[in-house]
Image (cartoon, rainbow, N blue to C red; front, top):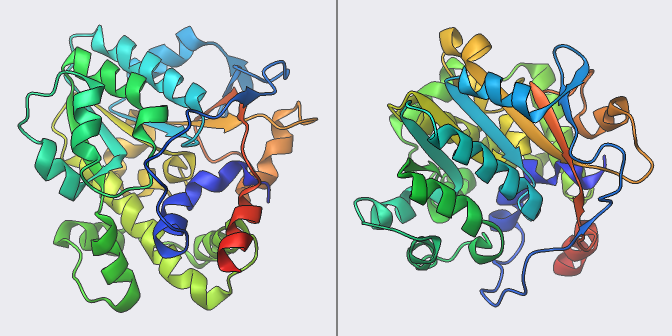
Length: 317
């Protein structure tokens, strides 16, 4: 498996294995492969054809749940998300935006505050130790949401709470999350696929037993994101999350109400292009599926980064 689906498990890796990042940031990663044939092209999975931003926007406007996937360290992904937010802000519908990057504890601090700029928001969010590089990647997106006056919501559980639950079940999950998970179990096939993907995304350096709490953590986080959408109370409910969370088969859409899921939900994954892979089918292997598990795929240039497996191996040494 290539690392383009890193975003599926990056949050779990960060709190279960890797140290928190320093607040001494060096700026957003540079983009490469901008001349790639697929760069900035949008593919309609259901109809097996390329489409354009205008058609995608029409579908977005007619959806209740709008799931915008990303690779967290790709600045282009956040620019595209900001464009969607700006377009939604022009409509008469009420709109909420739920962020994987904001947890329930952080929200207690920002809720009710008269926050005008991304700098003010980031200062509050940074009162807590997180791995999110807000300054480098989320300023434009935050500003779009704040300037439009949209409702901003958390879509994650605080790190220590999730850690305690996964390690020894020392803490109880909120009833609503437990209920969503019980009502929407993964099939054995989906569980097996998720386990393999988590092991691969950890460079093959963990075994099946080590993957089990991470599998459960992935489900907890998907259900938490879904609950944020279900409880949002807006006409249009946007989720900002890693692309692995917005997949239709076993991500957040699995936990949304069946009556809302099929026609009222749109799942958009932003995928980084790969050198030499210029046809859509060549990206299927990254997602262990017979088709890409989204409604649309928006291809973008890649963020230039160190091979994550090298960093992972250095840490474990």
